Amino acid sequence: MTTTPAAGSCPQCAEPTVAIGVPHRWCPACEWNLDRDTPAVVGWKWVDQWLHGVARRLTEGQFAALVDGPLTRRSMSWARAVTLGAAVLLLAGVLAIAVFGVWLILSGQGLIVAGLGLLVLGVAFVLRPRLGRLATHLKDAREVDRASAPELFGLVDRVAAEVGAPLPHVLLIGYEFNAYTSVVGLRRRRILYLGVPLWATLAPPERVALIGHELGHFVNGDVRRGLLTAVAENTLGRLAVLFAPSPNGLRGLTGFVSYAVSSVIFRAVQAVQVVLYWTSQRDSQRAEYLADEMGARAGGSAAAVRLADHLLLRTPLDLVLQRESRAGNGMPAWRAASAATRDSHAAYLPPLRRLSRHAGVSLFASHPPGGLRAEMIERRPQYAATVTLDEEAATRIDAEFGAFPERVRQALAGGGPASERRRPRTPTH
Image 1 (cartoon, rainbow, N blue to C red):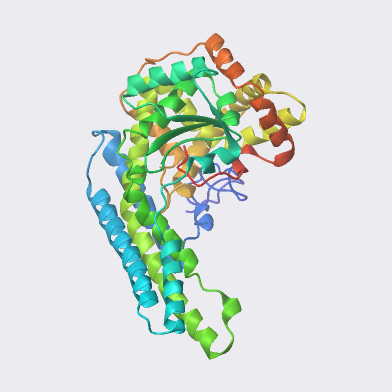
Image 2 (image 1 turned 135 degrees about the horizontal axis):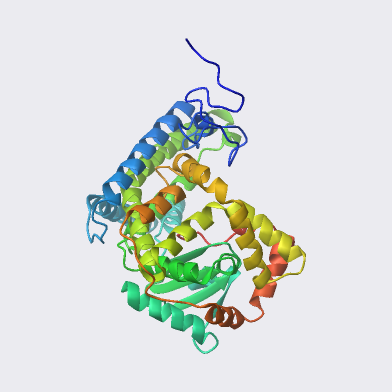
């Protein structure tokens, strides 16, 4: 005999459904009705569903392998080898295009050929490898120095020593609900960015875990951080933009041929991107888990778990930050209001963790889903904090930010959520 599920119950497992994170009800127990929200990758629904299923199996499989296994830095892996090989081939291709363009210009075969050579050189210029520039990161951030922020630098020094990471060359504070590290330029200058909205809403132990995680990226073997490995992904991205077909060009035979050729090249580049991400992003996600563990070693496992869950509550925390900022309140009020929000949303964390295991997986995702990150820390060996930060020291660090938090408050009051502010394309927490 069959039974009819009660109102608000899952038709598959009869467990209660929720409407959290998506605009329709779904089941946290069996994920019923979540497949309505498969992320688009190539735009063909059946392909997107298949790719999402592949990404889900890879993500869950890696989690299962690491949660009870060794989690150490790997200097070389098959994913890194594939990415390095692709980077070398792409660099060689860009160099060959540039040489061909120079040859056409110098061949002396007339203005038309010379013009074609200039066009080829232009393509090579667009595809040239970029090493990043500090100026790009300074557009929406402020650099702090050791003289003006000794307490903050002292904390970074202690965390770096604990996790065995080199110190950043540049420390930035900015407008975003985010934190990240990056390496730029030929001299490979290390950058640590701390977004004031995120920093202000964290308790002192969570701030230590955050710094430990970010500095961990300098030593966790992340495939994205290498000088050569980043070239492959960036060059492919620029190729996709360069050859993206435009329906506006469909005029006459020439326009049709141009559209057809660009479409073929664009799809070929997309296919290579998928394969490359398929290999490299597993390595990047493994590095994220290792960075989380480094954060746990510095700030304690409990603080690292709270940090991971904190990021799952970004949307309600954004609303709180905007509300307090529009009321003229600064960092102390942000911290108190965010703590109250976290308490009131504690019951939502289990379904949000589960939701992230569906919505947060992709072949293109460099980070594991937030729910898996929190669970990984919980299930691995537990660490007590080795670097402590008390409330008084945390208050002194906030004072070292000077007038900058007021500028952030004004931006939040009139410029939208902190998590949506535009910034340079860099690795994120």
